[in-house]
Amino acid sequence: MPAASQSRIAPLDLLRGLVMVLMAVDHSSDAFNAGRLFTDSAFMYKPGDPLPLAQFLTRFITHLCAPTFLFLAGTGLAFTLERRLAQSWWAAARYVLTRGLLIASFELWISWFVMPKGVWLCQVLYAIGISYCLMIPFLRLSARAALALGLCLVAFGEALVGLSVYASGGPEHVPLALQLLLVGGRRPALIIAYPVLHWFGLLLLGFAWGKQLLASPAWLAAIKRHALLGAAGCLVVFGVVRSLNGYGNMLLPHFDNSLAQWLHVSKYPPSIAYVSLELALMGLALSLLCALCERGAPAKNQLLLVLGQTPLFFYLLHFPLLVGSAKLLDIEHHYGVGSAYLGAAIVIALLYPACRAYRTYKTAHPRALTRYV
Image 1 (tube, rainbow, N blue to C red):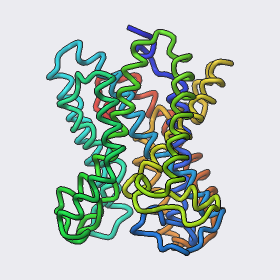
Image 2 (cartoon, rainbow, N blue to C red; image 1 turned 180 degrees about the horizontal axis):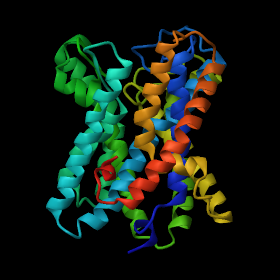
Image 3 (cartoon, helix red, strand yellow; image 1 turned 30 degrees about the vertical axis):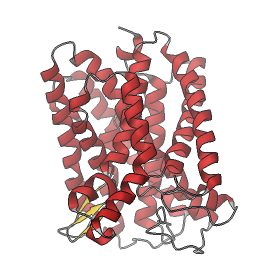
Image 4 (cartoon, rainbow, N blue to C red; image 1 turned 45 degrees about the horizontal axis):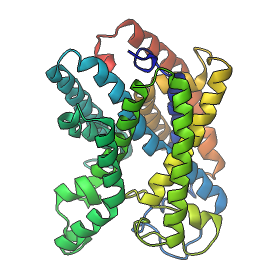
């Protein structure tokens, strides 16, 4: 079996660690930053509203997180299935279902800390977990078929959202099933921020790429080459879609030619412009990390490597720490943009030793329940 499936791949772990740091910045901003922008949708942004550059860029850099999580979840799943399908389809399906449901259920933990009592949030863990479950009929899908299906979901997601809203007689009448799958929205006790089919498309793209890596013995060179080519292609798509300023922007076009307006793309639900831009940035970051790894393997306890090898553990702890400390100290939304970075630095410093210890335990106990986290 190629090296890519036998051990962890350092550039992928480093990339995952990088987006964990960026995610901590966003959630720290959510806890402490009074001026945090949250305008990443046609439903949230009123044309003409200002986009202060420091606040906008602080929010913008964190957009890399969710697409990278889903893409690399698909890549990791391709590696995992290469081993588990060799045992049996049922064993692989049982693992994927168990892990998917467990990841999705962790939204209850997050909601308990960050939402009002009785309100539950469906965001990135919901998207990853349910996408795992949706993969069960496709465990033996070829790379080409996964790529085609993923691209279709990305390309036609906006059309499907429009059809769903039109057929329902307006956004307020969309059935719960369509909200969970396509449109997103609010219910009295539910906030659906990540309608799953859009994100399932990204997981399929990562799954297709993982299958390609498994066929390449020179995996480091393959990652670097694929990342650069993919980034170039995605930048072209972004430039075309954003220039045309119509379909592909999920009703959030740019209203002038300023940098902020060009980069102000729809995440809720994700538009073609958003997906192509973030995958391009992911590819550029990954190619840079590959170049660094070519010079020498990263130290075992390097910060990004540790966070990238314990991402779910870090996620489940950092969010409650940030929001809980802000509430406990009565400093929610009291400060400026700098508080986003300071809070992130503090929570990373606090959790880094715990992540190292958790990684050690998980490595020493490969059959324990920790293999799902």
